[in-house]
Amino acid sequence: MSDRDATSGRVSSLTTAGRAPEGPDPHAYPRAVDADPTPRGAPTDRAAPPATAIVLAGGSAARLGAGENKAFLDLGGVPILGWSLVAFHRAPGFDRIVIVTRAVDHDRAAAVAAELGVTSVVAIVTGGTTRHASERAGLAAVADDVAARRIGVIAIHDAARPFIRQRLLERILTDAASVGGAIPVLPVDQPFLVRRGDGPDAAVPVATSDLRRAQTPQAFRAAELVAAYRRADEVGTEGVDTAETVERFGALTITAIPGDLANAKITYAADLTAARARATDWDEHPLRR
Image (cartoon, rainbow, N blue to C red; front, side, top):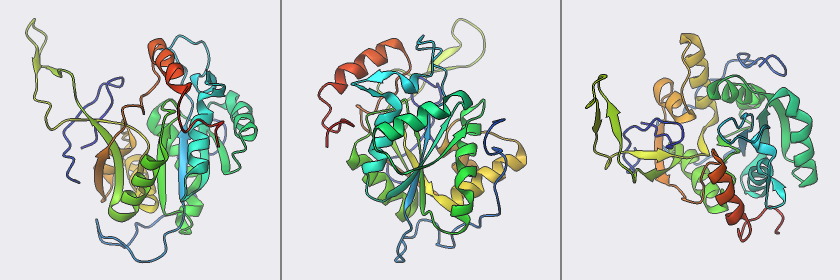
């Protein structure tokens, strides 16, 4: 069900109609978390606990050629990581942020949050060698609060997507709390080929009308999200993104909502150049109140 942006290579069908050695052990969920008893897809009338954002900021930027963690490269006078931290800090409904980064970057991440006045960062943890392992490390950091029902929804976001608008965060949080999960998606607007065999004609085009490119943040009810990652651990499987893991090992309805072309991922040097141009007049710039 889950789609994937072009830079990561995986795209699959989805209908828009609704369907680390340091820090916490990424495998250590402090205690069992039962799935929310609310029926699948059903709204709830009880007051929802606040949401948590897990921001992944541990990339090596090998494809960018920057020579350092791209989360700390300058973008409009603010480190790239800072854009996501400020966005979640400003968003109503989110009361805490967990940063997942490399062990050597813990102090830098803390400094970015402090310089921008982001007081909602509650933990900085070390990520793993894969995206899934980093997500798992972030979830382990808040598993006690999830078990105690102090967190209603968790949104997992890639810091390399700095241009997240408040209206997108509001929509994702609302839909995830209501139906179980929500991810922003865009149409596949370029030809898509699937390789079948090794011959010269092995790559064949496929229809793209039912395919979507997934973005982040991807948000889900917290208890079911943690439970899905525990079940993935039990069978030794890793998903390529949050939605795939929830789809395979969870029991949530996941809604696809319209994504935002500006919410593009910084992967290559050309992406960073484009992002710096966009940052000059971005109306939700972290330094603008």
